[in-house]
Length: 265
Image (cartoon, rainbow, N blue to C red; front, side):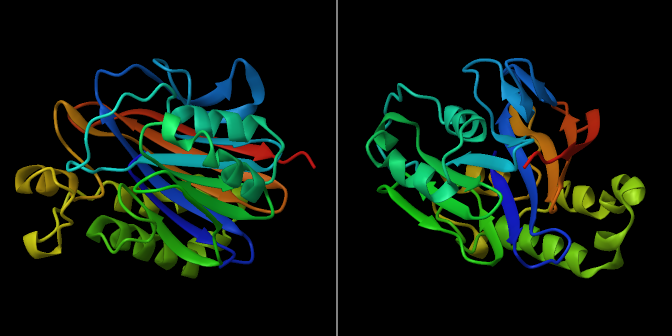
């Protein structure tokens, strides 16, 4: 997952609203959004290499999302634990979001560089292990999490937060549940934007100008590495809506899903 915009406690119907793009090697095996055969209350995509996930929710009112942290200047390091396990373990657990992210302080160096969002139905928390471990509660507002610091003013993150805010302020956010699959189309359209950022707005993550340009749009289009899926998650008082579009290496839609989960309290 390489782009997340999340609105936390800004909308009366949807206390948590999230849109996200997952960027990955196209040849890395993954399962599209669905119920986990080993944890039937868990829903989301699954990495079939390491067994974790990038964005998952649970019928028990839990959500986790992870991105990697891009730093071409940092030395390469072997990570014994997959960052996707952070998502898998949180949504299957019962710790509060803040307790869960704070408890990572000892094991965080064992994972690849990560940014993590965790929601327990009541609180939203964030953790990272690069450049150093940090964990905190996320305050109400609209936030961006990509491959740099939380709320870093990267063009793709600012674009995504504007798109999410505009949708939540529109009448589409209030439509009946049976009309929601159509009403969220503007969010998927925003996530499909392939416009690169201007050079003077690009971050410098140490990977060179050509790669910074390639990775700068919300939707990364490249035959080897690019956006594999887009997701929209809307969490209300008693339901979680999870919609996903999967893409092939040419950027064509390959899978579609729309699932409404009733929250078990």
